[in-house]
Image (cartoon, rainbow, N blue to C red; front, side):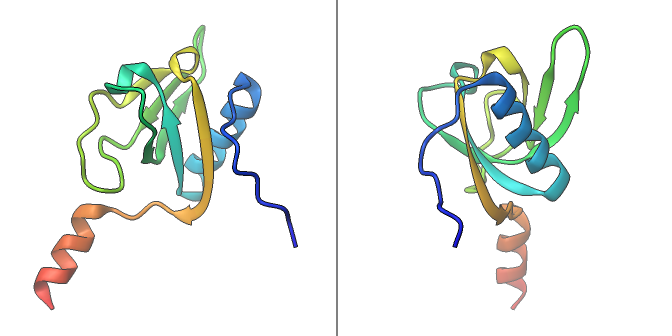
Length: 102
């Protein structure tokens, strides 16, 4: 069985790999960045990664509880740490809609 790490990743190269995996597979990722509004970790997913002079990470505009993030565009250098999840990132609004229609 693979050992699960419970540590936040703060090395830029490793963070980029985790963020790229979230984009490619639609998995959730915990992100700590002051630009998101506080020192908390927000669980969201990556929509796009723009490689240029600076690496820009485009997140979903909401976290998994439906909270709208302060911003969904971050430079890689603005991110303090990330935490990878294996589970898919659920759309909290679709969950609410599906529950109401039942």
